[in-house]
Image 1 (cartoon, rainbow over the protein chains, first blue to last red):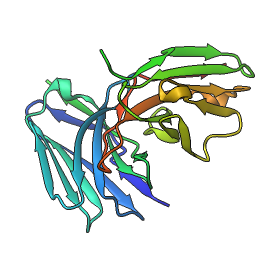
Image 2: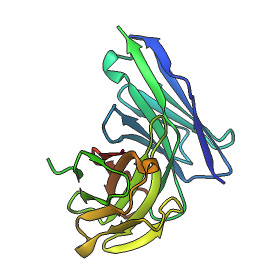
Image 3: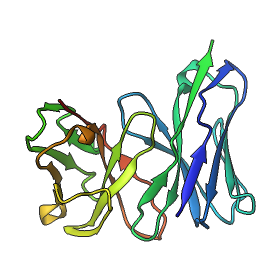
Length: 112
Length: 115
């Protein structure tokens, strides 16, 4: 069955540094991949979508890469800020209908 | 604010009681999804609707769970005879189907605690 794995350990970095989060998947060839941000007690918020034919996507300080050979996506936040502290989820479409399979999320903490 | 709205935000119930949650999606969205999330895990798909039709249910959705979306607008998720294992955050999301690629807009969730 399809499986998605993200860094299980929390990531702690210093303000101003680049945070890099990993999403690996198996038994799957998704047409696209999405990243969401989730703050405690709140629902996930969509950040970026990258398609299988795109190697890289950028949005402001965010950059996502998608390597379909390695079955991996990397999510980068450059010039990180304490306000970036949250849990970041990667998600893949599952069959039809726009349903998503989510990874377990990686908690990011940016210290001032 | 025309985002996805869920009510109630929190629900504490005794084991064996029935509970019902409501989700109001973004008005023009034709797809509505229910997910369940437990601590330290990502959301898990439960069921989804396209307009008023319930098109798929996960194996996670036991017979005690039922969802409706009358008239293709708001949706309700009912859990009968609640068990402690039902304690979780129940998330609703909506999206606009078209072009094959859609982002999901999530509500704030309903946190259920079964005591």
